[in-house]
Image 1 (cartoon, rainbow, N blue to C red):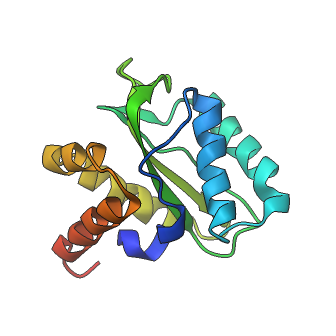
Image 2 (tube, rainbow, N blue to C red):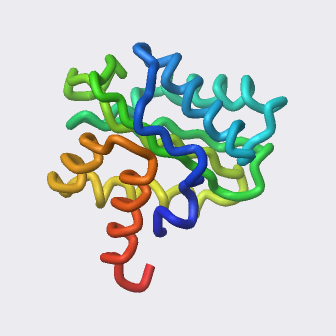
Image 3 (tube, rainbow, N blue to C red):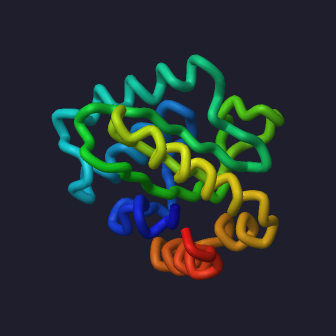
Length: 158
């Protein structure tokens, strides 16, 4: 599944201000609210759902990357955003390293296939060291979106 299908362009953040795991999740969810992708009234419940998911095991997958995600009945389609933290932050990642690249996903409970395909695409792209390097050096949402667009164009038939 291509990034263009689920990443909300207006929610992408190249300059995350957060310094803690809780704050970065709140900041990314707020960016989806600000972009009109989720309703403000659902914001806190979505944050709580993501934090419950984190209690099962950190979505800090290592190599500077975290993919916080949840399923929530308030969304009708998979929606996500990308954030970059220049200094990185402790996300309780599996390798103990700070996370600086964040992909946050919220999907409807009745669409598990979309959720899994998005996670699969993120995972595949993040195995590319050059992709991660360029993404972590992105200075603007435009730069991030351009990189995601290039990654999408390299996918065949998805």
